[in-house]
Length: 323
Ligand SMILES: NC(=O)c1ccc[n+]([C@@H]2O[C@H](COP(=O)([O-])OP(=O)(O)OC[C@H]3O[C@@H](n4cnc5c(N)ncnc54)[C@H](OP(=O)(O)O)[C@@H]3O)[C@@H](O)[C@H]2O)c1
Image (cartoon, rainbow, N blue to C red; front, top):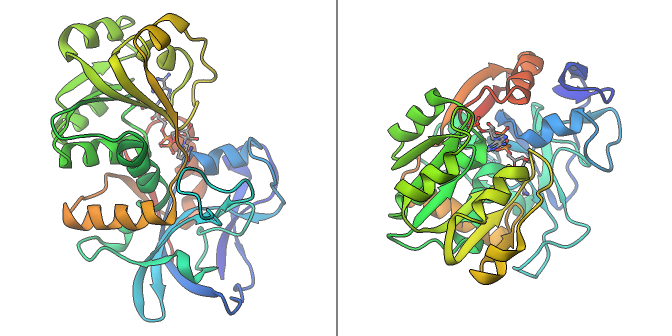
């Protein structure tokens, strides 16, 4: 079969399409014929050597949709979450490093990780859901506890997780404020229902504009970290919630006063449990959520596809089509 493998650490250019043996599923596994896969920043970070347990060469990819046992399916990429809904087990892992991933014509996964594809979505749309969709679902609902009529701030709206968070929050009846480095992305977010848009690149004081025009912010969802995270602590209302799932811009140096004086609730989150995954698929079907696809590439174009993500040029999810 054809598969995208990383041969050496050093960036997306070291990934290439190879001919490799088809995986042989164990009794507990299901063999999925992958029709479409999607990129996450994780895949790019892996090419840069920023993840532990990388054994080379490895097949990349956490997101995938395809066919298994005659059914159209999507794959839950979280392996071995465990019994505790609050947190995954320390030895749990994600599809696509350490185990072989979805940028391949076939992937073998535990049978419990294979779910029916939402009927209203194409294979390419469904392939965008797994990692980003469940991370956003847990950030917005399970951890963020977003309620109807609340205001939520989502930073860096171009990202895959962030676009899902916007779609979910609007479907749940929230008011949504978003930030981005690009006016074009902000316009696209507006078209998807964002109520207030702020450019953090051209407006160094965007947080002041958010405070003035945004009204009380009940929940902030962030994966930028760095100065962005420090600023949002001063933006959420007293008693508000801040959910973090990443640190794209690095670590944050935070002011302690607003955290304790305003009795903020800072919550970490990562991906989602099997229960989150099932609830997310139901929510997507019930609200007929259409994921935001940035571009679809043939799997042979893996290097430009990953470079687009590395350059943060995308709005929404970058998809790979498998032959
Ligand atoms: N913990 C988890 O389970 C989990 C799961 C998925 C992702 N993540 C993490 O979440 C982050 C995003 O992942 P992704 O796959 O969605 O990546 P992505 O699609 O590449 O999104 C990155 C986006 O972050 C925004 N950004 C970058 N620097 C920023 C800054 N200083 N302030 C505000 N926004 C900034 C940019 O938005 P604009 O282009 O709009 O400016 C960029 O497009 C990564 O750090 C990733 O590792 C964590």
